[in-house]
Length: 440
Image (cartoon, rainbow, N blue to C red):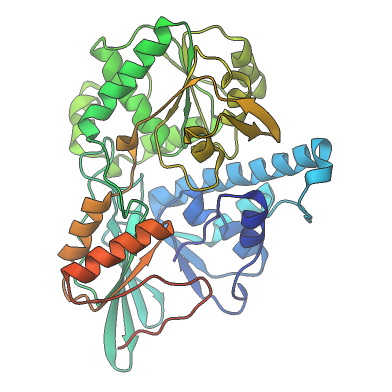
């Protein structure tokens, strides 16, 4: 279930990403992919490169999104390798090249098998799966597995990444059916989100304030889902005359391709999307202030652009992509604002920029002073917060065991402790590389 990239300290993540704790050719029969974010799908080309030849099951929207996301991931890896070898050879981590190439990313897509939400299918003999709406990003799914063992059927649920109710564009998460064992994410296991209703207002306030001083608003945003959500809200703010008429540039060819895939999958939309835009034949992702860049030259021209202007670029945690170049050029200008609109993992550039104790950060191994205004809006997170997670787990009937996964230690422990106090189930925080048995 899932095969993603680690993010964080360069040396540590390089070592984790390059190796598996199993033989991809001999030990794995199939993969079920919950969604297309790179921390869930980003190592599938490496799995393929090392000999895996089974099926990769996912929703049709996830299949389309993963295709472009993996191509972009491979391109970034190739370019980063090229840059470090050219400019920073002395600090290079020993490497045989990028984890995988664009060719590897393209070739592995032949393993993908698209499925509909609610469709029950055989993964391998004795194992069936049903994909349920997770409400996290377009095409995201929770997994409901039925496994025949010792003449009995063991039911296992995997949350993938659980979304939130009332987020724009996509439908709310479904309930998990009765299961014996549940693997549940814990990204926000110890934190509450801001009210989603106030997020749009704060977005407008940051833009108005920065525009008044002639500055640039830099928004690091994942090209998948977060960019579309922010453009959606900017469209609403403009329609309601809550922001000034300033250029809004989406500096991400990947975001352009992802947005096209959003248009292909209206089966994933929620009712508000239809009512606000589609009934009027309007695109939520395009209006008069917005433009999308395609070429490197267009991106470089933004360095000389005068404010006020909004520039949104990937990656969301500032670990790759065009946002790093904009930050290197603009972070030292007090007229500007860096606005974080999503989760920043430990040891990422994005987390260091948000850290008020740090007065400078390293970008491309060069120190850059933090003089721009730094703001964040946590309400845009596509992850369930601690209250959502508690409600999700408590709603699952028949639960005998819970495995808390996909989070930082503090959040995992907090979720595990609250669950133990609330209901009589065995709770584990799995250790990397350790095997756990489950009873039939």
